[in-house]
Length: 95
Ligand SMILES: [Zn+2]
Image (cartoon, rainbow, N blue to C red):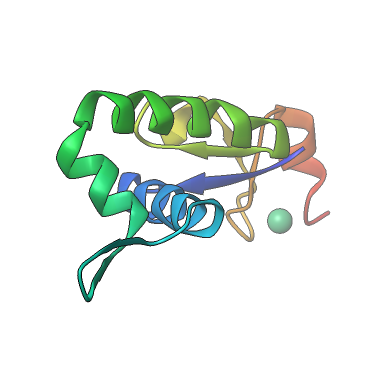
């Protein structure tokens, strides 16, 4: 399978977007706070647990991040630099 390899920042950005998508904005008086910021500030442990779960869940779609893996754990097509989880796939990519 073709691998999408995210930097840690990209992973966190996607996680934050997912949280903001599924949660209602938090309103205090007239001010609106983004859900991911509320969670991150008020319960950083839960925020991090959620991030770990999110990272696990996107692996099913072949999305990995440098937070827990190195690019060298995968095989790269020498032509186009697409990453794969098997060496044969990388060799056959641009042939
Ligand atoms: Zn290729």
